[in-house]
Length: 315
Image 1 (cartoon, one colour):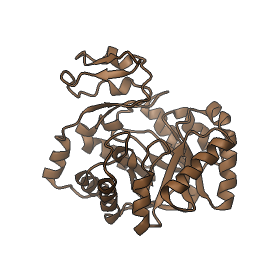
Image 2 (tube, helix red, strand yellow):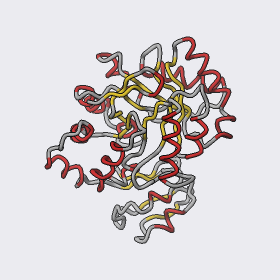
Image 3 (cartoon, one colour):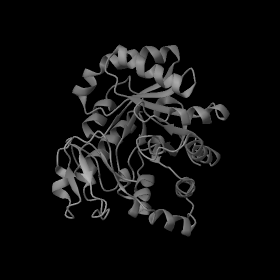
Image 4 (cartoon, one colour):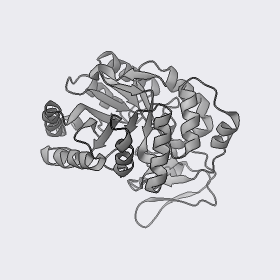
């Protein structure tokens, strides 16, 4: 496994980061023993970096693996905006993982300079926590080019978790080229960069070799968070990230995996996906949320790129 120092933090992380969203209640909702088993297999193969969030509900899995591997690097995120919410969510993270510190604590889904300004009280709280040793690094996650650019210019921010993939799926405010330029700027400013959604929330799984080839060749990323929910996924992904050709039948199995369209509960019911679906498989229900008719859906994934909230995933 390749390890990189995450920007100016001095902390070494595996090139492959385990994105834990997929094993938790928002997606696969695996039993604790099964989710822990998958995490442990990744650790056995060299992964030392796990991404989670206050929203994900995956702290119990991480707490279990930390019992035997207490030095794993853990990054979490929250929607904190002031002292109170920052303290609450950080304490929940520390209690949830069963450790007296967390390596990185990020503000979730920051859009740009105005969003960061509105959440600055939370950042100031985290700065004090960093001085006390409760947090080793402060960061943001973002789907916005403007978010990357804003964070790149702020000395107090150590880590940026941006969306980037070879199709530009999920980038809200510009093109893939513009996101590449923003990430390059942040990287040259010493920020630790660990990418998200290299498989476009699942929509690029049919193009997995191309998607991973792109992100692994992109020079301004220290680590890549990939959601995994099966042992086979872990083993194939580790092989690819280690520069090895994965076992062909295992790769083919992943490509043929019986996936489904999954709509997150943060869907805003905007209707863009409904207009985009040529199969007529999507509609807005009486609660104002998108719903899918699985008997019609062909899993083409064309609805995903038009969802600005990235609430639609193929899993």
